[in-house]
Amino acid sequence: MRTYIFSIIVLFIVYLTPAHAFQKDKDHFVVVLDAGHGGHDPGNLGSGYKEKDIALKIALEVGKELSKHKDIKVIYTRKTDVFLELHERAAIANKADADLFVSIHCNSHHSSAHGTETFVLGAANTQRNFEIAKKENEVIFLEANYETHYEGFNPNSPESSIGLGVIQEVYTENSIKLARLIEDNFSGKLSRKSRGVKQASLWVLHNTYMPSVLVEVGFLTYKPEGKFLNSSGGQTSMAIGIRDAILSYKDELSLNVGESIFSDKLPDKQPPIENETISETKEVFPNIVFKVQIAASSRQLEPKPYNFKGLDNISRKKEDGLYKYYYGYTSDYNEVQRLQNEAKAKGYTTCFIVAYKDGNKIDVSEAIKSTSN
Image 1: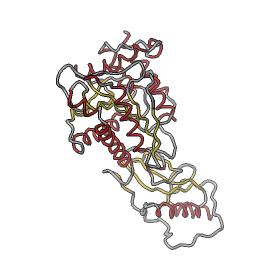
Image 2: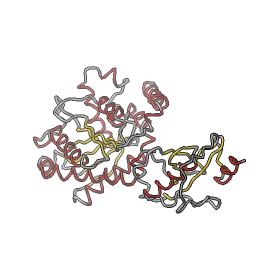
Image 3: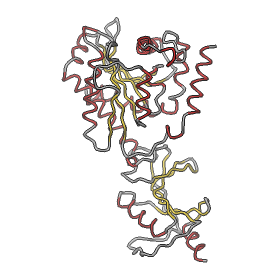
Image 4: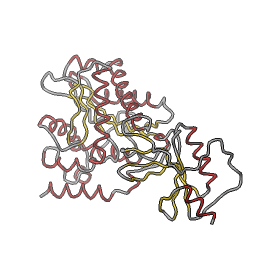
C-alpha cells in the first residue's frame, strides 16, 4: 500500500508541475554540476581515498572548462566541502531552470570491479544496479528531517524505488543520449574501461525537471583506478571526457546536427523578396499574423536562442507529426520580410513566410490580397 501511495504522489508531482518548469526561454545553456557527498558524508573511502574530494575536484574542472563557452552557464550544487541534502541538489537545478543535471561520484565494490558507469533514472534495476542505488540513496539517513523530505521512501526497499522512475520519464531519451556520449568518451578518447549506461532508482535524479545523469567515474576500491582518480591528471582527464560529452550533446540539440531535421519547401505562391527593397511605410493587417518558418523536426526542441543560432522570439507548433519552428510574430508584412532576411543571414536559407488569419493558417498571397480588398 505504501508503494502504491508513493507512486501516486510522484504522479501528482508530474501533473501538477507548472508548465514553465518544462519549457523556459533563456539565452544560456545551463548545466548544473553536482559533486556527490560532502561535509560529514565522505562517500566511499576505497583504498584510503575520499569520494567527496575527488568528485568535487572533477566537478570544478568540468565547470571551469565549460565556462570557457560564453553561451553556457555553469551552476554548482557545491563548490566546497559542505553537506547537501539530496532534495536540495535537485531543487538547485530546478530553480536554475537548468538544461542538464550531471552528478559526479566514485564507485566501490568488495571485488576487483573497475571501470566507469553512467546512470539514468529508471525502475529497470538489476540486483547490482539496485545495490548502487541503495548505497547512493542511503545518504538520506544522514539528514535530520529525511522522513519529511522523502515521503516515506525507503532506500532498502526495491518496491519503494519503483515510483522514482515516473517523474523523469519524459527526459529519459535525452538522459540516455548524454550518458552514452559520456561513456563513449571514457572508453574511446580516454581508453578507460566502460561498464556502460545503466538505469537505477536514484533519488538525486528523480525530481529534476531536465535530462539528468549520475556518473560513476571509477572504483576507488580498485587500487590502480583509485590511484588514477586521486591524481590531478586523472581528474583532469575524466573532467575533459564529461565536458566533451556535454558539448556534443548541446551540439546535437542544434538544428544543424542530427537526422530528421529539415526545412520545408518554399510554397509555390510565396511572394519573392530576393533583392526587394522594403519600404519604410508599414503595411499592418490587424487580423493577420506573419511568421517566418525556419525549420521542421521530428524532435521537440526548446525554443531557445542557443538552439536557433541566437535567434530569439521562436515559437513551436506540432503539425502533421512534425514540430515546426517559427521566428517572429508580427502583423506588419514589411517587418516579417526583414525578419526573413535576418533568418537567412543566420543560415536558414530556405526559410519562408507563413500567414495566419484569425488563428487559421492561410497562403501569404491570400493574406495580402484579402487585406487589399
